[in-house]
Image (cartoon, rainbow, N blue to C red; front, side, top):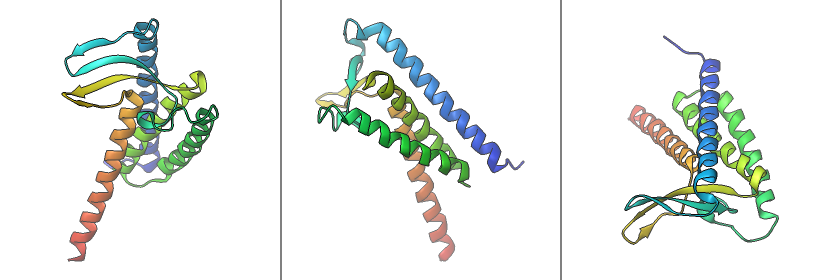
Length: 166
């Protein structure tokens, strides 16, 4: 059974919507559970839930540079999201559509926070021994997964193209 590109695009949009929904629900839960008053909830010795307001980009980079930074980041993210949406609707690869859906869903989830709060709600804290990863959220995870899918799609295409040249 062949699924049309239009149907795959709709499925991609539904995946993005699901990611935004789960992201926003978990952030609302986090805000109500441990942001006010701020407290750390230890789940495992290597996994905590922590209240973090991220006014920068991924992993807190560019935080605190200026009061205009959240607006600049929001505007850039909106432009990138529009590009991702157009790309999702025109892509022909199923795996690429999946990758773009995850990235788009995560980007929109974080845009909502920036517009609503001026910062992104991060709350997932992972650490192993002396290695401590910056706090993140479901949207960040979706973006990371989407980028991994994107890279796998590109490596797979290059591998197939390389094999066919032989």
